[in-house]
Length: 150
Image 1 (cartoon, helix red, strand yellow):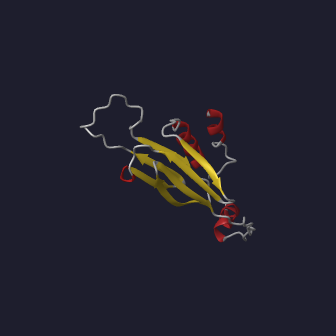
Image 2 (cartoon, one colour; image 1 turned 180 degrees about the horizontal axis):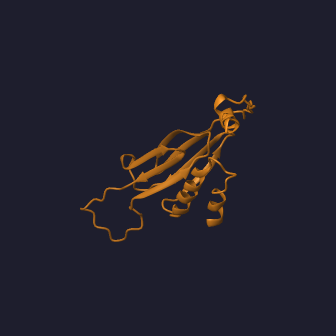
Image 3 (cartoon, helix red, strand yellow; image 1 turned 90 degrees about the vertical axis):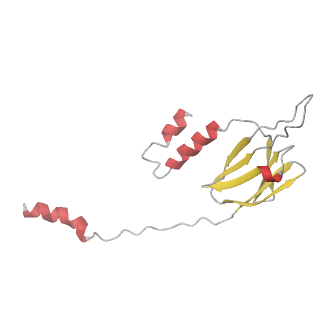
């Protein structure tokens, strides 16, 4: 991982410093709970499905910030319940997904203990721009004129 992050420190990658932060975030998110699937739906759609047995809709929070989709969950424990065996996990979780540019969250549904987050890739044609080279400004000519005065 160090080799990859040092690649983004190269002067050839101007403006890509946010990738280093994304790689750092992804490397920290190694937890396998809760289990999830990512499916492709049609040509431009995706669905992230998380298995959240025992959770209720009110205990799940979904947020999107700077292409980072974060899903948080925390169950409320019933103090009156006595478990003989407890095999269903009830711990809190934070699951983070990094979305590519042009991928938008369409909606989210919670059905039968499964949280579905539907994503849509906005299909934009790539635009090629020509950068014009401007004539030198007065400011850029000044150092040469100062040298001539000396």
